[in-house]
Length: 103
Picture (tube, rainbow, N blue to C red):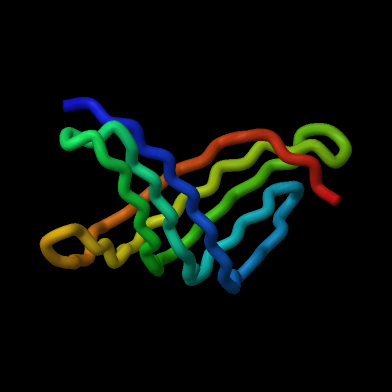
């Protein structure tokens, strides 16, 4: 049965960073939280959850022109999710691609 889900991920961490000929690379541990809001569930209820997560983040950015760069950022790790019945750890991962302005 279809339902709606909105998720907000907030992360912070330290990283090893290297700049080589316009390419910037970063790798390091990351900690964060995931806030999820679900609506239109089968019993017509809504549910909110707040889950801690931890993992590894990696980023590569290539300068295109002036301060404009194209980047790829990846995260892989685990989050602790609580459900109505129990709680468990689940694997999480995401990938972001985009343009940025380097300040």
